[in-house]
Image 1 (cartoon, rainbow, N blue to C red):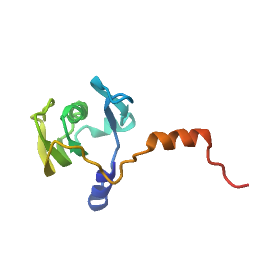
Image 2: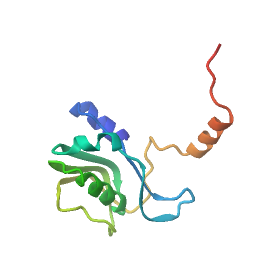
Image 3: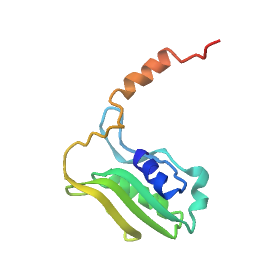
Length: 138
């Protein structure tokens, strides 16, 4: 979301956020990507529109390909992809030929990337929030 939000500042276009996971909570790999959050309410608006898909990292390309194919099913006029980082490694997914442009900000070796906006203790924060919800002052 953060890279897309930064780009939105300069392009002044609407953004829609999707969430796709390839892993379970215990970090085991799923057989195929799973939609966590999708744009069901605006899918019909994508017909004939130009789409820029923004992601942080192109790792195995599995979730990226899945997302691209889901978006292509809405018949956009064009679909381009921008990723901050592309890991130089063998990919399990492919970029479909219908993608008009693929741009990677930086090519990197296959290593873990820690982004400044990633929450390291999100599970701890979630459980603390459930245990003691915020209350408004009276």
